[in-house]
Image (cartoon, rainbow, N blue to C red; front, side, top):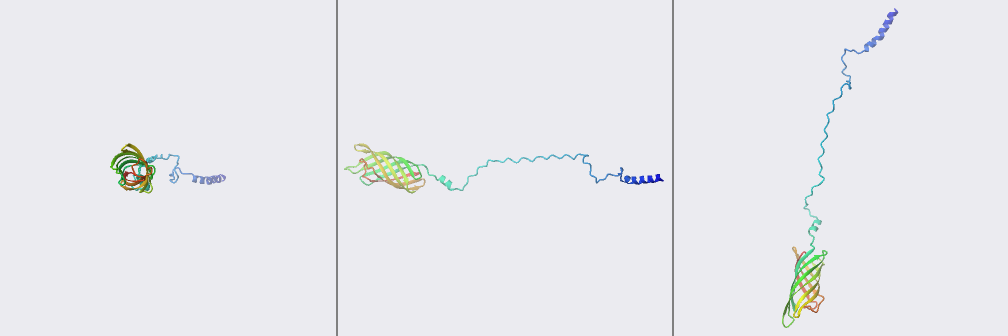
Length: 222
């Protein structure tokens, strides 16, 4: 009786354990995650690096010339020349000595208003003061200076040495002229007229003291 009771107790203890043992013939559970260590994952395909950006040209192309003109460009284009040249024609048809002269000149502007220059001169005189008329051909040279008081009016100073063909031989006669004139632009050239007075009044001068001398001329760049 005791043996039956012992066998019964053993069966009661072994029954739950047998019920929990896995069945080797049963199909595997599809919900169980596969063993990740069983097979390595597929290798990743390498991605090619992106192409480098195109080179940037740091040298900018020159800008086309602008057609918009500024005050600076006008000032540059209209800059007056430093040098000017021309010729002066002088005359004196009153008094005892009649004069006609021509003086080519070249000048340089020191400032927009002040200029200096040199000139050569030839003049033909006819002296009617004596019982008979005498005519002379004279030549010389001089230096001058102009100062523009306004765009149209200017002051003029001039020193000349003229070789005069007198009856007793040639004599160098100095002249120091002061005066002024008026100038008028005519295209690229300028027309001017001036009245000068000799303040030296040398004793060999053929003119009366302070006799005005009138000249007209044309110049380029004055």
